[in-house]
Length: 446
Image (tube, rainbow, N blue to C red):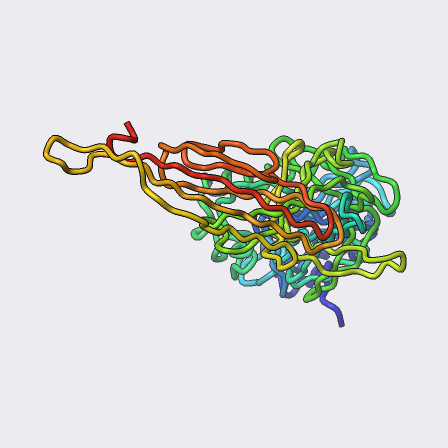
């Protein structure tokens, strides 16, 4: 038998109620009609919204709610009629003493028949994370970008045909929901003496209200077309709604499609900088989250991108590397490292070293001099497509002069002791350039 939240008829002897004298009608709640999950990624927190149809009779009805074997926070339980709200009063929700994992709703109705209700609560144990797949074209100028979300359910409850919504953004929690869900009794211990202080109750209610306010705003988001993700900014939060419904049983993880963009313009860049990467060339993939790159509608949640390349017309793929990244705001540039490569070879060689232009103190000691180094840099592209290479050189001093010659491409002074050469190479092309670095020392530096 699958795990279910069970709402069933109140047992008078168990709870000590004289139902006959109180003329209370017992209500058995049917299974869910719909369920929506709003899952945060910055905290172990999920807001659940269920819709069910109650069969009520005129008068006082009693409804029992059990959350055994789940991580539901019982103090967050809330129920509202979706129709006939002026004829139905939710009187209270009580937690009978000496009874675990059980709440009792009293509902006063002035009509008889089926009434749709919404039940909201907070739970923990549900989580989500984003990951991506990028497929480069054969010439590597554009990339098909596909986003996915993996939802994991360890809440103790099965959620069938659930609409999944994901919130990006931090929320302040006084208590962890998982701790509230594992309490033996909703307010620590039964009985008025152990009740939660009023200030604590008010803080907890405000905390619950904050999450629910975000959810109410989420309800205003229009439904997307089939197979799409609807994304909407909610103050400091960002909401992603996955279209359609999914069944996510307890103990399962499920991959859900997030979005797909066929042609994102990208730049493949190869970098060489000994101080950062050692004696190796590192490949980077860069693009921008804006409309020019067929993106820019929403921020992109952080995750891991695995990159492949289309090799031929038969769509055979080669694995190019992967990179993890953080949240990418709209109009933000992103540069992802795919790791060291062996198919682009760069070798700087010290060809000559000498000292010159000495200065001396009156006592004959050296007070200043120049050191002159001649480097040759060879860059070899063994690939069959054009590439862009950045060669960064650090000098260790801010007092220097540089003379350059050969295929050095463009030259840029990055800071006081760093320069960058940028070269474009065709497939299977080799380029060489030379630079003479003169560094000034002692009084020569002045």
